[in-house]
Image (cartoon, rainbow, N blue to C red; front, top):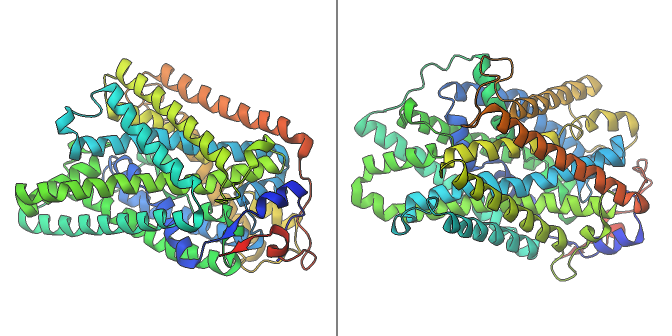
Length: 513
């Protein structure tokens, strides 16, 4: 397997890695990355059309995205893969901006929507003795900070052991969603359905409103490839991972979204609480008050744990990519250090936790000073920031498929997107157009509709746009700054031609355990 020639310090850090990920680890790792409970309410809040656009985007985005990931992941199976794909295709500046956007979007997400939904779930299931966690600023911050630093601690510890966290998280959330589906059917049989699936006929306004959160919900196939040199056999396992995790992820979204729409009245759908509201309704209908109270504690724990593992698994992949980018010249060299004991990028892990905590604190302050403790309004703003920063990071990653086909035609490709160059272009254009649209419509909700200048997520248009554009500009600026810092130790090596590279274990020094 050919690899990128690397400097001595890069090789020294890679020798600390351990081969820990096997085929089913990758499947559950990816399911934990893709199926996120925090977006269920945001999608279902668009009503029955959400089902149509879920299916439509699954066919026209998720499948092409999976094909693209399978080719790039098996052709260039290196640690920090997303950064390396972009660097090989477009150079260090594009690689640095992509790495920073891809990485920093996760602390934004962890300290934003994940924490907000987790706090909402804690409020619902455990918050009554405190008078509501979200109602008290300091308590909201403490609960969110604890949530963040548990995820960071799990990331610092060895992947060999901590891979069971996202694995178990995937199993727990699939089981939780299956139980919800069963309760929906039982509730409908006994009490009828308060919601409806009628009115699903597509409209452009709903598509514009939902495309960002749908793309944000689907992404995650490539996340595990950022740990390619910690996989047992990436060239065989990545395509299978894409297939199995894709099927499970489609079911993981379709079942709860349809269930929410069936049991929750359209007027009661909300971006932050629809799943929890739907669960409470069906469990009460089926089990009654006493049975529901017994189950509530366990379900609350399962929801919070599922949210926590979503943040954990994304930090696992994104932090590794940022560390490799820093080592290769797209950031401060110190950020590329891996722990000799754990084989994890501890400096980036800790910095991710610090950034997530700062973002959480800012959210709590804004929530209580300007939004009156309204979690739904806060959720809309932080979800916009998480979507726009995340989808922007793919604007170079997806076109890399075609560029690398032309740039390295002799690279060994164990898996290729079907249809030759035409197929590659189709897959690339579909995925790129989706992330471009998701970025644009997240930064300016309601564009091309009558609401283009109206309030967004409960805020006036001016403050909203200033918040998201200033945040985006700062993050892009950090990417350019990291590029400037890393130029002195940049790795400008390309990908070796087929058959000319050394074996991966010999170059990377990755240990098998």
